[in-house]
Image (cartoon, rainbow, N blue to C red; front, top):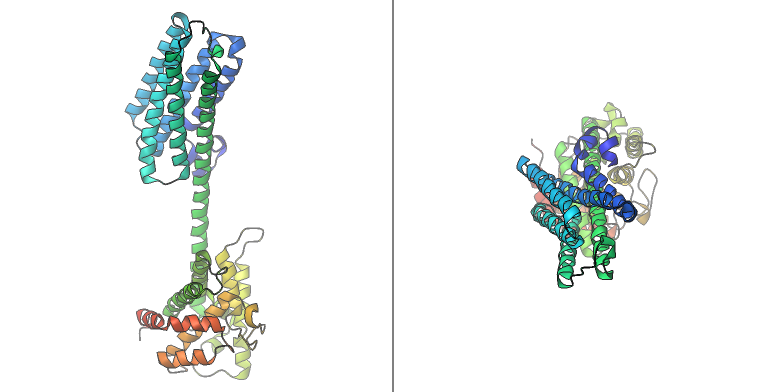
Length: 418
């Protein structure tokens, strides 16, 4: 209802559905009229019942709109059905009995429930939202109470029943149950809309996240002395190692599916700190001097600074960015504490950075660079095995060794063009 009246932009357009606020308003009017009808008389009772029918018809049209099956003929049929039920009800209000009016309302509303159920079943075939399944259950319950209420009256006719409010306990209970089921329908529809709105915001957030990551990757590529395929390879390597580690039972709490996905998305940003390294050092063809190497090593902490600058203050930043910060700042740390920039030791090094460390080194060894020849896959594996427990986490080395054949496949798939 709030989105209908006060929504903005796309939200206002998407949720401004006339049938939904109309149904809420009609159900509210019906409830109020039923409450005061014992003192206000038949005119208010008529408003209560006819508002209920109109509200139920609005819900039926809303479901048809969800199903993309709303047509002019359905809208016209709803109008005709409402006019027909209203005309008969007003006639019975003056010339019929209370039982006749109860039967009429049960028949009219039961027919609407059957229409709603038919539409909901069609929606359920295309959408697995739990609200749709619950709506089907509630509509079945509602239909059952209306049928049962009429059956009870037919089986136990009471000529003395001159008012709706003189029903026995069971009849009254069924009427209240039907009212509560209408309330449940409204709650489920509201929940359905809120979830749709949340999903829309999540899609928007993911689109912004992807755009930000693409921009940061592009920034990294402009200044990096590696190739684009290096980015693709290391991303795949990280995913392989992380998945294998989880399968081996290592770091199971940290290596959820979501965390592995975030890790692989963040991996391409591991060397983004190189944007702050001067060209004469970053693009030097030969070996770096001791002074130049000191400057080159600052790219790890620079990477952290660059990625932290991408965060929006006082906003919920993405987990991928958090992961990228850990990778950028920690992928040159060593298991024995001899790495940089902080000299972290063992488990103090973020897990994502420890995984990235092996992926990055393997790719550097087997790739040809202007300052080095490429190593064979066997020699690279032997070197990584040799550094087990000193430079690399022993568990991650084990995972790497179990996936080494897949590393060859990925290296070949994304090999650099000469």
